[in-house]
Image (cartoon, rainbow, N blue to C red; front, side, top):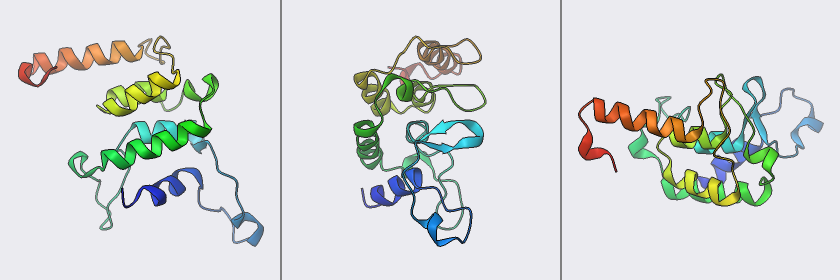
Length: 151
């Protein structure tokens, strides 16, 4: 959990766009990637996607500190838990954070988002709910001969 505070600050406080001193005093931003309407919840749900190591390599899933990710998610859910925030659609597929947690095998985020009240019946732009995404992934794993991996 050594980087959890830094990761949370990175998520909530985007870098200033100018050298203006006043811009350095910022409020936390729920929308952390405005061009895609991605919230801090979307980013945490995706675990390692887009996270870079010190040598600018994509972080491997095995290197993700899942405990720190959960701690960050719980901290975010203390502040951002109204239905509009929990169920915000973002990204190219207009997915919720719950869709992204399912797609990135982030079981902890799935549990915490559902506990916080995320709606599991919302469809993305492909008309898929988080449950549909889960079933599609399960079927592709079975089709690829990974029946032992499917729980």
